[in-house]
Image 1 (cartoon, rainbow, N blue to C red):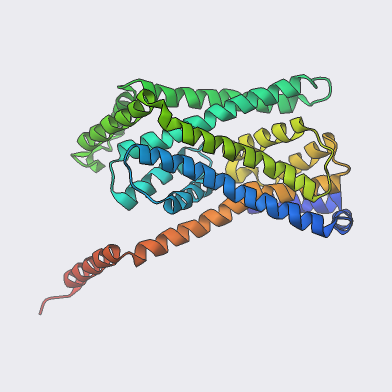
Image 2: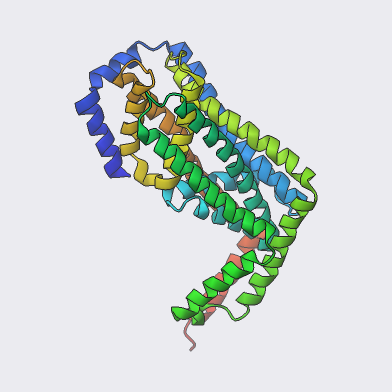
Length: 356
């Protein structure tokens, strides 16, 4: 991450020029910038809130009790993990599921079912958006670099595979059990079975049963998906509006709709795939792509890339880190947790105290 930031700063110095950047900043309408960029920040937060609201509603449908405020915090933490650890959105999902389980001690099955269903809705909408983006690129095939089309197609294929795996888990009763069986075979082959609790297979089997029952609830009663679909659609529209508002804050109001749609999915694709490794190199690529699509000069393109990446990358990292600290502090302030910690410290003190 640090190397990427240094590379971007060097790019700004040698290829853009700080004087060019200062000139762009000096020509901005300050009131216009503050108004639209503030709206972009608000839209970013509301977009995450909508994703959290969709998951909260799915959890409620499966009788998992958790506050929306907690789900909102866990959603930020999930984004933080996804951006810090490049593992194709899996790590963030696992983290969110674990945090909900830790709060209410519910079985992992219904929590995972609601989380994966929420992810399926997200990826379904992303697939539709990617198809729209590819169609827009093809209408300008004589002008658009092949790399953009390749990125969008790769993202569509990756999204399709991920959605297919989730659908397999949702519609095949024995799918999750087969995957866990393969995992245990690998554990046994590596000689790690001695580190696995004896009752773990039974507990996993119980969770898998509830996982399938959760998916079955959504399949048999699709009305439970209406509100989450609405919230996810609203989140998508808010996320797209962030891109529009960033460029409006710079006074760039003459860009076409296909520009925002294509850039939205390109940024999302690279950030999920590369996470922290996208810092620097991707910012440089974005600045040049913006110029290709009609941004007046490289100075304006570099500034737009910086402002956009703050909202889509750095802000989730900062807010996610703060959410981690809030969750940790809340755990320590929980009376039951304090009591458990006190008991543990007493036991450890008795064990470590030498007998006379």
